[in-house]
Length: 123
Image (tube, rainbow, N blue to C red):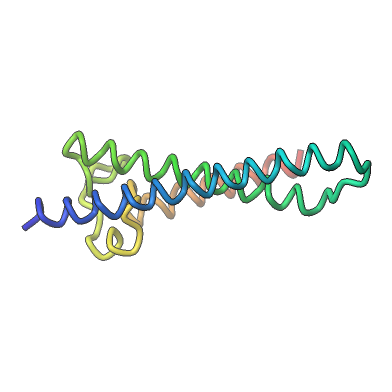
């Protein structure tokens, strides 16, 4: 049963990876077009470019997450938390097939990152 489930997740992740790569390519082309147009017009829409650069960053992180999950499938460790090595709840994997951390570890990592960001902002 688990092998069949992993095959389904492999197909889902592979399709998601292809879609993300396509989106990244289109966004990069758009950004390059904007740079060329700005050079000609001299009136850049900075807010729009910043928004699209932020979107590109989010998409690249998502791609890395999907790639990490695909590597875990290849290694046979898919569904096992990379941090605590406990099984990831199947319900979590249904919602986030690219999850590589169990919910407890994900929350802990986010808590640590938030603390670090707050310390950085205070400096």
